[in-house]
Length: 264
Length: 264
Image (tube, rainbow over all chains, first blue to last red; front, side):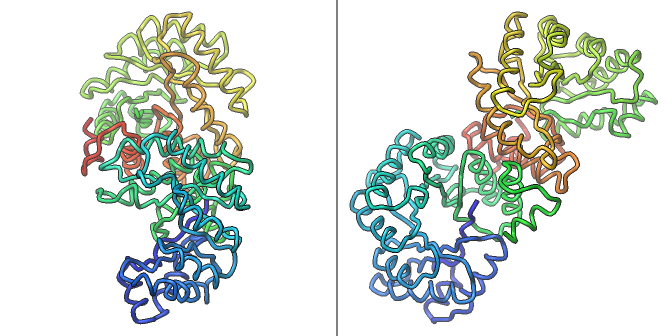
C-alpha cells in the first residue's frame, strides 16, 4: 500500500499562501511531516488560484521545493498538461502523473508524457460522459487506458487505475461497484495494472469523514487496492493500513508492526 | 452485519463467578449492555470450569437469565451436545448453534438439532485433521456442511460458515485464504450460506489486538462476511461496521448513521 500524501495542494490555505509568497517553509514542513506519517509519494497540486499561464512555473518550483530535503517522489497533480511536464522535467526519481481520463485526447496528451519521463500514471475510469455507475462500465474504460498505455510503451504496472469513488451521501450505489472494479481490473493485463483512489472523495459532504475514509480504505485494500491519495495525518487510518498489510501477509508480523510500517 | 456479543462466557471471571454463585446480575448486565452497544445475538458459553455433567443444567439457566429482560436471541456455544440441546429447549426466538465442524459424527449430532429447533447453525470449515491452509480446502469442507444441512432440511441461509481465521502472528498465510473463502462460499448454494467469524482469533497473542480485530472485520465485510462473534464494547469497531454498511449500500446514509445502526 503506497500512501500518497494529499497535503501539498494549493486548495489548503497555508500552501496557497506559501505559493503566492514563494515561501518554501510550509511546503518543506508538510513534505517531511507526511513522510514521517507514512506517505511514500507526495501529491503536489498548485491549487485553483494560480493562473493557468503561471502553473508550469509554479509546478516546477513546487516539485523542486518538495524534493529539496525530502526523499519521496511526487505525484504531479494538475489539469494542465504543461504544468505536468514542467514538474516531470525537474523531478528526481520515479514521478507519478495525476491523471488521465479515458478520453482519447487526454490519453494522447498524458500517456506519451509517462513514456517520455518513465513516470507512473493514474488513469481515471471516466470520460466526457462522466463516471459510469456499474463496475462493468468502469472496467471497460479501464481497458481503454490499459490499451493506450501498452501502445505507448508504458508498462501496465506503472498504470494506477482509479475507479473513482463518489461521496457515499449522494451516490451510495457506487461503493460496491468500486470494490468490484478494484477486483476486476487486476485481470486486464499481465503484469496487472495497479490501483489507486482519491480517498477523501468517498466522504465529501458527510458526517464522520475520517471514519468513512478509513473504513473504505480498508475495504478497498481487501479488494486489491495498491495505493491511495489520503490524509496521512490520520493516525488511526495509517495504523489500520499497517494492520491490513500484516493480515494480508504483505508485511511480516512483529509486535511493533505499526512502527515498522512507518519506517519502511 | 449481525454482531454476536462474545461477553457472556464463563471464560471471563465475572461470568464464571456469576455461574458458580447462581447470580443473574452480571449476566443480565452484559446482556443489556451488549444489546445497547450493537449486538444482535448474544453468545452464551458456560466456560471451561463447569463440570461436563452439569453443563446442560447451567446452559439452561444461562439462556433463561440472558433472555429474561433482553430481547436478543442467543448463540448457544458449547462442545457438549447435551448442553446445546438444553439451551435450545428453553430458548425464545431463533437460536443459533455454535457449532459443528465438517466431521460426519459432529454434523450428525448438531445439524438434526438445528432442524428440530428451527435454529441457525455455525459450521466451522475444519475436521479432525485440523484447519486446512488453502481457501479451496476450506470451501470443500464448507460444501460438506452445506450438503448435510440440505439433507436434514436446514435451509442453507440458516447456515453460518466460519472459515476459521487463525492468529496472524503465527499463521499469517491464512488471512488471504480466509478472505477468499468468504467470497467463494457464497456460490455453494441458493440461497447462499451466510458467513461468520470468531473475530478475536485473528489477534490471539498479538500486540494491538483491537486494531487487528477491527481491521480484519472490515476487510472481511468487503468480502461478504455476514456476522461475527466479537467484543461489541469496542466502540471504534462498531462505528466502522456502521460505516461499512453505509458504504456497501446496506443501510441508507444519514448524518447520524452510527446512532441509526445502533438503534436498528
